[in-house]
Amino acid sequence: MTDSATLDDQVELLRVLAHPVRLSLLTALIGGERGVSELEAATNIGQPLLSQQLAVLRRSRLVDTRRQAKQVFYCLNAARIGDVTAILATFPGGTSDLPPGPDRTPRAHTTSAAQFARIG
Image (cartoon, rainbow, N blue to C red; front, side, top):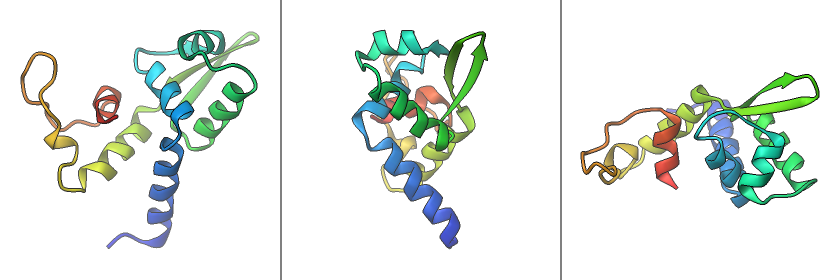
């Protein structure tokens, strides 16, 4: 049985994901680290919405940041993305039942960011 604090964390994590702008930002980070201007160009999300939604992703620990001079770079937090995958894997038809990948081989159950991206 899941304790209340764990359940609250899982609900909050799924709530954060259930927003098209945040999901778009996470998808843009699948290829690796990106600066704010790169994210803006890749997603066509302008300021201040971009900053607001990146702050939500930071608070939920779905992204990590790195500062270099005045630039801030974002990347996926693989462990936290793994938490999402683990939540979804508990349901029938979870991540282990995803259709085959582009090479037509069955996908193994993993907790990688790439696996997460295939859910959406």
